[in-house]
Image (tube, rainbow, N blue to C red; front, top):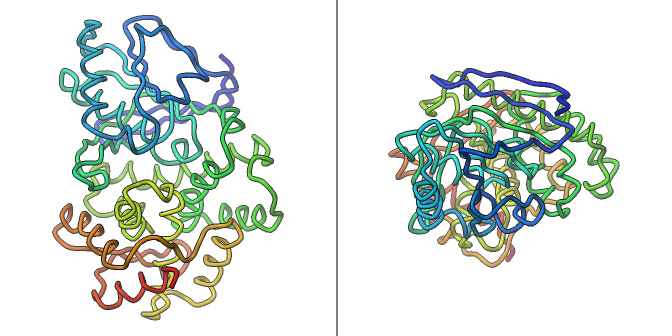
Amino acid sequence: MKDSSTFEFSIGAFRTTVTFSEDFPSIPDDPVLVVQDEHTAVLFPYPETQRVIIPSGEEGKNWHSIEKILGRALARGLERRSLFVGIGGGVVCDVTAFAASLYMRGARLHLVPTTLLAMVDASFGGKTAINFQGWKNMVGTFYPAEQIWIHPKVLKTLPERELRSGMAEVIKSAMLMDAELFQLLEGIAEQGGSLKNLSLGTYETLIRRSLLVKAFYVTKDLREQELRAHLNLGHTFGHGLESATHFQRYTHGEAVAWGLYRAMDAGLSLRVTEPAYGKRVQALLTKFGYAERVSGVRTEEILNAMQQDKKKRGTLRFLLQRTLGDTVLTTLDPDLVKQVIERGLEP
């Protein structure tokens, strides 16, 4: 196998190796269980006895998928040192990692993310989860993979919308602490054109820098006691939109981008965010084609859905920014939250 670069990170008591590979990684014959969705099962076929196929997208992020994976692992006689391998997007990575964390109190875990979103975010850092009773990521564990394989060539198989979904998380990473990455994104946005036309070298740079940003947070705060919460920039609003629309209308990245618009709106309204920076972020999101206003949902539905974050933390907290790299975790007046949401909806 040809490796272009390898990084190692200590995440809590875990150690994760991230390898950028020119070739698709080879999967050992035994003992292993491969988890795929309906798309990656076609692209990367494995013997039916070795794999489990779950529904693609949020439809597969539930207890049924976990039971299916654990049942197959048990039927194959996998042991604690056996290997679970997730090949797919964010949902496959989340579900595979969750199942591996439960099987015999923790089996080995490798992930092969096949979407931009999974490469820059979902596969790395150890958060595992399923949706539960309509709530986003309500049930899960912290269980970092021991190995993550990044194979940028697979991005060429993705539709434009899927690439744009992942790019929202890249923008978020740049906003948190990487001014050079932000400038690179501005240059890409200025050029316009299809994201499918970006070179693999450019994608590798975007992925690498995004992972290094995330590593800064997760290596210091695996269980999100405080610092890691900064990675949720745009997500309180975004998860509310996803849940309110039953995970059907908007991709995760589209919802996060809308959440970033809302975070800028709230910060500007409170005079926390520097006006020039707020406009710069809004301009970048617009040039990448993200909608500042969404339709098909009511303010009250989003507000109700956002209570999932309140249930997790005891209070509803939001991330605002003064400027690039200067992030503030705070509570907001409920009236302001309602106004900010309403300004993000189509009349």
